[in-house]
Length: 261
Image (tube, rainbow, N blue to C red; front, side, top):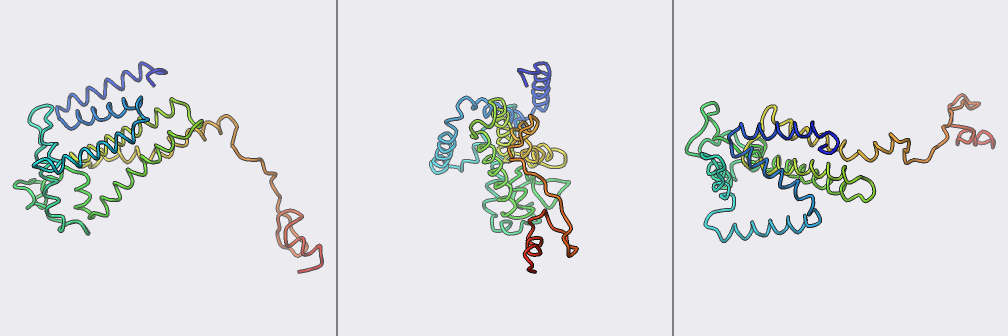
């Protein structure tokens, strides 16, 4: 888009940056940083799998050598001053401690997890984690469903990018950008629970995934290449018994021609 419609691209990028800056919140700024980092990794995409495995191993090691679990790393992030990263880390800690209360079918009371709560929702603490929020609503199976959907989306995008000769480099980069957006959402879920209209940004992106992956087929059809052999249509015919058959060589017609029924 930046190469074809430079003004539109610059306007969109500028608007996104202004909205993030105006929020004065660490969450949007962190999400923007994750998105830009994921997009910039396009040039090193051949190292994606080693990078993912290496990051997982590093986090696993840190989990056991640090005094606190790895999710307390969020408490160290404060990009604007006054961030509530500690609350988000403590929420994960409490969800693990009270795992037996919600893992099967969820729970309708989490107020005792934290020393403070919400006036609007006195039965619950501030569930600023989408994975935990879904677990509270529908148990661990619902959280697993979300993780499985994200994993399948990323897997399909990876397969689409690796299809040699099917897509141009611009289309591959567009799919990479879609994957970067989904990745940014999945990380942001650790610090905020989506609700109302904001949910459409994520689920709408997943809903349009099929259309993004079908770009090569749409381009071939637009150019008149369906990729299928032309088959001569057959006209239904009425046989002597009054039944409909397809063409002169239908089983019913052949049985009549040979005097059998």
